Length: 182
Image 1 (cartoon, rainbow, N blue to C red):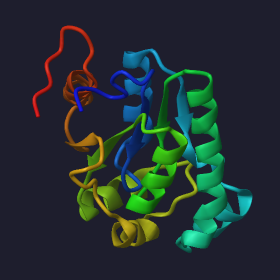
Image 2 (image 1 turned 90 degrees about the horizontal axis):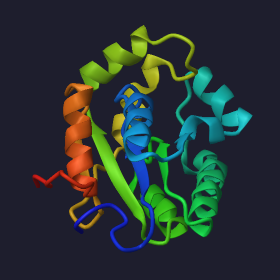
Image 3 (image 1 turned 60 degrees about the vertical axis):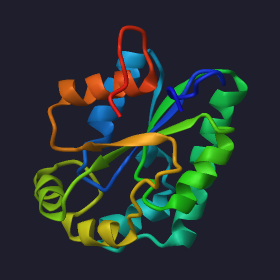
Image 4 (image 1 turned 180 degrees about the vertical axis):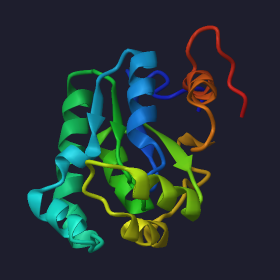
């Protein structure tokens, strides 16, 4: 794939990773760089999911069903309107990404922010105002299925400086003046 959404319309960029990987920060910056709207995946969780995670209990696939449906609907809306979108969401399993990819009609491009457990735990434990407690970090790694070679997208070091991350994303998405370095 030459770039995200090449020849198919504006890209749907999914910024994914475990809690604490910087999905929201990177996602907002990518959206600004690409001139696309940004959507925070956490905002699509039903209240029951937020309560469960706040109480320190990991979500299971049944819990994630309504959340994935809502995100898929939002992505489908953008595709039908021929608009691009940047979505920050954990999308830890391949099956979740496949479901979102189907809604995006193959325009989904994944940006996986890779992070080790200790760094994730340290970041989440210092965070304030978020429902995800640090004690759930291990469950995220237990669920995590990193991007597979056949999934359009790229993996970035979540600890790299934001400007360096954005340079790599711009190149991979195929913006003018940038050359992919894959």
